[in-house]
Length: 348
Image (cartoon, rainbow, N blue to C red):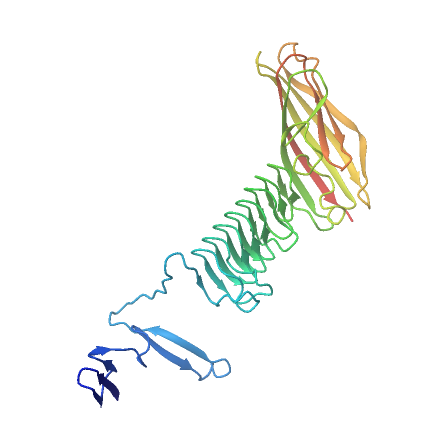
């Protein structure tokens, strides 16, 4: 039965059909057009009932759409600034999270995506999939459990809580893997040095391989250091490979062996000199680094004699990082480049 009201004639009548006022149908009890609603209470949904909306269109195949207005976000909870609904979502964000323990665990970045539980894609265009992940910078991407990224376009897959991409454009894959800017780490490899690659590591009897490149240009014969960021940089893990990453937790009682090829190129006269170096170290409980024997150094290629006065060497910094020392030529531009390969084994 429906109610019809006509203000022109002052008539009120009850008929079948929808409710009308002055000839125009108004809402009421008709449901959502194109959908059929149901409350599923029989087994297997008798304990946890399932309320549903099913497409009820006339075509054989019919799609469904929920369309936000303008740059509004799509979400599964109403923001209320508490752990129930979370904070306001970002413009055009997609938030398919089922819960949170902090109000900030939502897709708050513009165009960000969150699918799972306790996720925080706060960076613009960032994506978090899984459980307890965050991506705080632009286009960060995390997948898995406790996979975190705090850098621009940093990728962390299955990080497991102790890993992550801690440098821009880096990628870390696997539990405890950790990388730096434009670096890559997998299977527990850990190095936040720029452009470095690390595989394996973490557990007892684990083996890790590390690859890094150092560079720098000298203009005189004053001794200097080259690093992943250039000449005479600060003693940080971003610039030099560290023999004891993360303090002593992951790499106590380790042995380490490095082979390094260093090229000195005279940019003006187009002359080159190449060395091969190797060194071994023992890392004891507490993180003390001791060199085993001495560094070997061999000139394996050389052009002319103008670069005979150039020299290279290895040292360990105060913060237990691998440093490459170089000496150039007076009033000459010498571009030094080094390729470092490291092998470590945690034996206890």
